[in-house]
Image 1 (cartoon, rainbow, N blue to C red):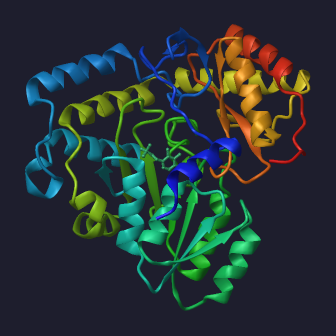
Image 2 (image 1 turned 90 degrees about the horizontal axis):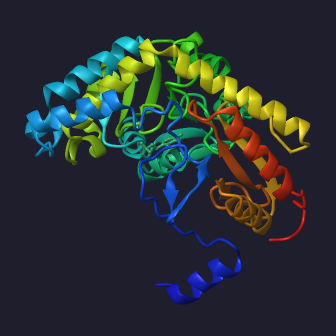
Length: 387
Ligand SMILES: *Cc1c(COP(=O)(O)O)cnc(C)c1O
């Protein structure tokens, strides 16, 4: 085994050290972190549902009725009517045949890819896919082929080179560190021409993008596109699901190890998620407000001369370059009472360390004004230096 003490020291020297912020309030726009109230631009609670009273109330009520623990895995005695109803409502919402609940998005990807791919499968993935999709291919012992971010041409070449072999394409819908959106229709075309199934992990898109909040595939929904969604982001709850054709879902029930060999979500969590889904459907104003804040942020950031990217989603990276630069900027913002996470390698490629701003429907223009002012003061672009 490697010398951990030395390895840890090296992380510190390389500005790669990770430390946890200690949250002592609810997950809200102005949480108490490390004992101080801050203005946060770091949560995935895009619609402000994590503390929504109607969801909390339903959660408490369900816990009183059904208890806290589910007590077993789905295939033993853990599959509750609450889970079943949520699966049916999600399928109806997304317009697909069936959905299957998993405990987390990470597990959904491991389970789904593991069920569909094996040693003889080539899994084609965007280079910037979420770690769980990469890990899923590795765990399945599949051959992993990564193509450059959003590079449909490169994927086309890779598919052509492996015609006739068993394959699978997997992509993030909204990329979690860049806020970019996958070219879904082009991927669907390739999926058709090469007869290779397509998985879209839309963890950051479902509830957020599309007129009705169905995510980045809303306008190009197709039965054979397999979707993965999480309940821990826009839904403000916890858990995840796979959505797709009935036979794929049934195969996951039979074969997805991260579905079979784990305790089912508490029924109360499923009830909370059902309430969140109802609000996502009934209150489109939350989504409209979120997109308005995104547009406002981008406009102000551009005016302030900040290096904004082309992302139009609530994930707004400010790319600074060196890890040290990003860390120092994040520290400067914190001194102004504003929390924005610095993202470094290995989460993003080397020399692309960044501040990752995430916007929520519950942010106000005043919040964003404060953020811009502090960003302008703390982000002097010195991105090309070492480390
Ligand atoms: C957050 C995220 C996941 C993991 O979902 P959890 O429910 O938090 O485990 C998977 N894929 C993508 C693209 C994500 O952004």
